[in-house]
Image (tube, rainbow, N blue to C red; front, top):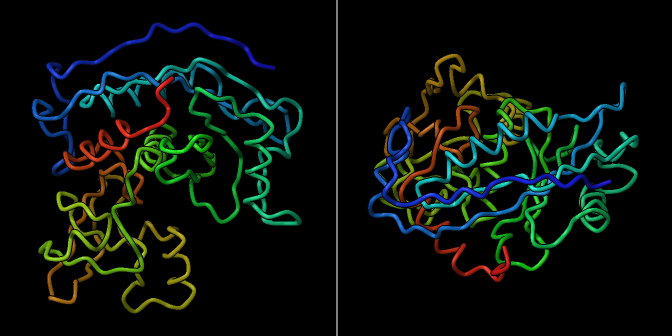
Length: 287
């Protein structure tokens, strides 16, 4: 059952001050960034837990999440409103997306077909998604007619705003800062053809096989589950001593929202510009 909520739409303008920074190259002064002046309505589909059948997230928690999202996207004048809060009541199995006996992709498609509404970004907050570390979404989803949908997994080190912002980045055309299948040089010489294809995000070895790692560790790294080997979580400091083929040490931006590290705090200038380009191409003119 859908419960309608009324929120005041807040529009952000270019003249507003940039966010505070805590990671390199994040939150550049937005005076040279375009302002799309667009608000997106979010429909939150929240699963219930398997014990008490209570929602995984209270509406107050999602309100706080939206406030943080608005801070993340403020430099390009994009904001979000939680217009509807829909609890997948009583059926906890809807939140447990395991890869048997029905595949994950089929189950997510069923959720989309049953519950999504148009003219909204539909976000499903689920307990667990097999083979989808911290969630999944459609790359360039805002350019399609039906795929502005995001599926978030509660069992994740990232805070909820960081998770959703990451997948909104994918929805608006951003890749991860890392690509385990390519090796980006620290000096940026191949930045347009490797990693996230952007040159103001430092080369990131996240997910690449670890030096002197066992086969089991390599598999875990490719699944994004060896973060303790890469960073010191208490300080978000990159500690893994790995070199690129030129012998230079990697120093990725662990605070980038599109990274795989649980320290997300912002986007870079080029990431903002690419999202604006994607948004302006979107067929979702009614958002």
